[in-house]
Length: 208
Image (tube, rainbow, N blue to C red; front, side, top):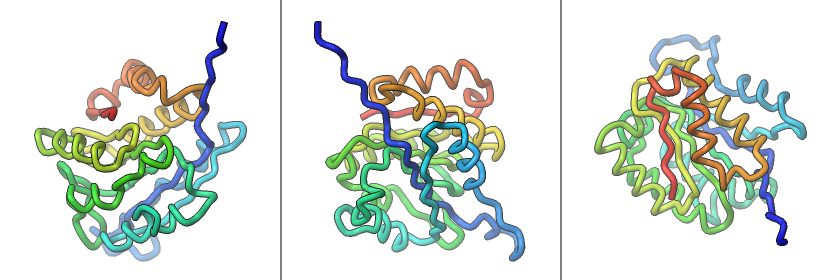
């Protein structure tokens, strides 16, 4: 009898996030998803290592993600990170930063070839990125270009807290699973089954 080899995901997460104060002039108020991920980190053993950066332009995105040249490729500690979480405003096939909109072509280019090095997924924590025909077309193009195992996101304009809880529930189960790449669909379906807001927000998984 041949034993099945389990492949737990490295306990690492990279989060790229926009400055959320772009719509209102609140220089002394900073909203961020980082504290939520730090709370998640404390629930895992070993804990989750988190790399967090604010970015607000396509050039900044490419500076982090461009294959072989970006910081996330040149940093050996970051290289095998399984989850890249993008926290932005959004619309079908696009993310919106405080300074610019980043469309499907730029997003596909930024993550081109990522899946050639190791298993990873890209998580769009943003409103409506996967909504409608544009969202579906973007998802298929993104997976083909990136080679990533999966991408996740939403088909509706999301409530901050409900979407954050959905994301944390998925990520908690992903990192705790002994073989998450084999069980991605089951993990996603368990989140939809157990948390009604995930269903109403259109939490969606695309697999390559």
